[in-house]
Image 1 (tube, one colour):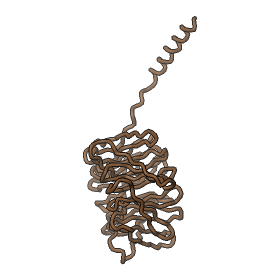
Image 2 (image 1 turned 180 degrees about the vertical axis):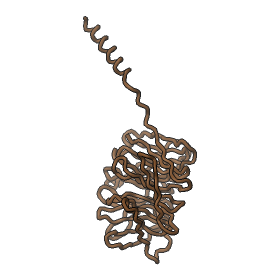
Image 3 (image 1 turned 180 degrees about the horizontal axis):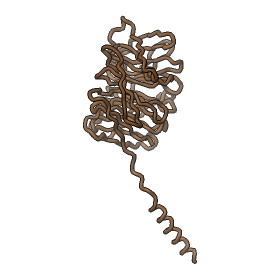
Image 4 (image 1 turned 90 degrees about the horizontal axis):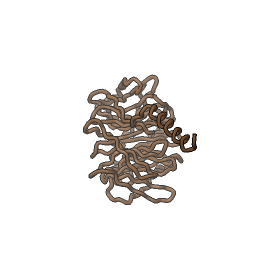
Length: 325
């Protein structure tokens, strides 16, 4: 057999082998119904694969706990007048919550379901609590849209509150890999770095004015990704170089609500005009869209874990999981 004939036989053999392999469909979002009327606001997946996923049932004053394997969920009442907003999984493995109705920080024990509440100081007034994060010393930092940010030390129980330097607006908040705490101000259209020892906040202005910086999240390099609600962009600020970059999301008149960065530095956003979750690859500048299967999903926040991006469809009383690989 000549070389040409052997090459032709090899190609035919390879083609037959490939044809016998099963086709792999594009990974699509999966949906999980929760209690009707819950209006889930924020969502947080525990780090362990297949572990529980927590959500705040803002309309009913409860913390939801979803088992994604079975699709079953339970809801834990958080207290009188509760209206929970943000939820994250703390370093202790427990869900921690900002509760606007109780004007308090709340923790739910993941095993016993015991609820513990830390009210803000009585002279603070209504903070309109939003989001929270942990610093490297195990202290909880939180934002209040009425013009506040604060800190809870779970070890001592001390709660301190500061007035934001430009008043109303503190919204999303996050901690960088180096331990710096930053928040985004929706009404103030800026981001700010908090000195975790003095409590002083330093304002940083994005290039686009009146952009409505809503949520903020760091990547593995400590760069800060910011969702612009008013202008439908995503911004990236590098604290080392002090330089900004900005990208417009696809579509007409986009509205970018939330942002989360996964362990591969892919940037996940929610875009309300097209009713979609959007993945942005900073290396290529490419946007991928994952439209909801129902209208008016209203995904307000995203958090995830390795291989999974999670959101809460507050308009449809369900959670959504998008494969992140």
